Image (tube, rainbow, N blue to C red; front, side):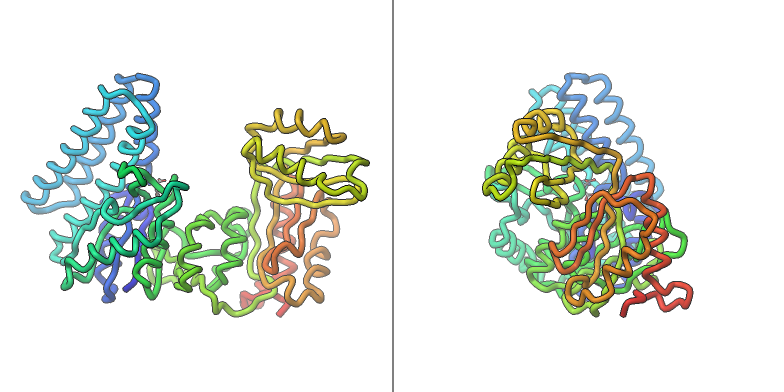
Length: 449
Ligand code: ASP
Ligand code: MG
């Protein structure tokens, strides 16, 4: 069995839904198809929910009508048979009635979650109706019947495996199942979700639960690139990457995949193939444990980084200092991305500055504080620490003329990152591209092999 997940853009219009259906029917394996909401819909639902939380019923109703109109147009264009149009109309009415009924109920996060779930519920129902109309046999299974999060909001693997297996066993002759990404139930049996962008996670969890032979994530780009094509001209797509490298890259801005989403696949050693709905023949990128070893695989950057330096003579040969510093960030629920230390100072970076003032105030008790903003982390992923000879020299040789604020190396075998001014980012990405890859010879490989 394989799992295919299609994102919001892939199911974002009638034309695209048809492309997805063609991809689904062309693969002959048994499969579970995981769908996101149509692009923009979850944002609209979130807006409706926010309006309700402010008791702005009039604006909420306006948003609901606009959404309903959008769906009605899709239904009219997508379906040919009157019978299907009627069925889809019924579905739409159900969704609209539900949202309308929530207008008068006291707002809570439970209501928010019910509202957010409607995007995936509608997209999967429409897709299932379309497959039926085109004569493809398939079964829509509700994520509510098997996707469960535990009290820590983490997927409950055992429950999911047991219940998904049970659901699937009811349909022994069916080869294509469709289900919702993102949504789930929680321990109190209420509708919940895996947080925004969670459909990839759903696909990975389902893949792990059924022991899939492959998980395919279909988006609107042809896999990962060796560098950011928005800022660098001659990039190339990478055919394969290890789970560790993919996680480093995803975190540092290669937004194609949420890093958490591949954990279940990695744990069960299930290859994840990144594919492009709009160019299905493009090879894409395979994330797996047997990826060939490359010293330099790819480069990614993350903007809006703030660096904080805490300098204190009390740190000299003392223990427990870092713990106290970290506690300040923990208490303020702010994640630290990168960290470097000297004997009398520690520098670290954050990307969420919502608590910055409080953090600085609390850190001032430890020593002198310097804050720099508008910085970017550049991440180089590959098998860097395994065979270090020459790699770091090659990297920094490219950067002779660039001031570097922090360097992090040796944290993992798969990542070297450093911090530069955001105004230098594009230059850095281009210099590294020129210096580290043999693009001119079209070998599309690291020069350091
Ligand atoms: N529809 C949800 C969102 O927009 C989940 C997803 O697309 O992955 O966040
Ligand atoms: Mg998405």
